[in-house]
Amino acid sequence: MRYIRYAFILALAACLLTIAMANRGSVTLHLLPEELAGFALLPNTLELPLFVVIFGGIVAGLLIGFIWEWFREYRIRAEAIRAQRNVKKLEREVGRLKGDKANNVDNKDEILALLEKSA
Image (cartoon, rainbow, N blue to C red; front, side, top):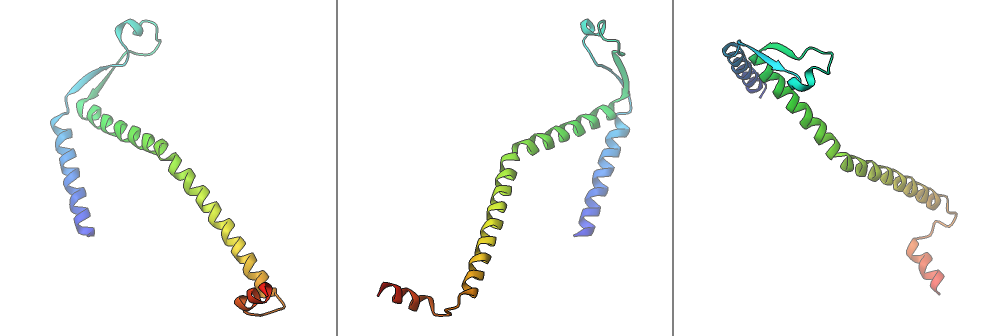
């Protein structure tokens, strides 16, 4: 399985390298519309190779997706934490009840104790 993973990573790296080499041309990115560029004190344009723009878009999309999914799963994580607290509380209660039963001086059978109480 490890070799399959290495082969996949190698094939992916070759594809990304091929895309990068094919898209080395420089492109101009306008960071703001021309109307807003006059108000901003920042430079309006940026010269980058096209493959940097492509890979940057992919990375930005992945980050946005991961953050979106993290916020979406908040309810699930919160419910799991509440359930875990409830389990710990119930485990403590079971331990306490077992301790009470062990400390009971009458070590009678529970069924016999119930029958004696009802009689």
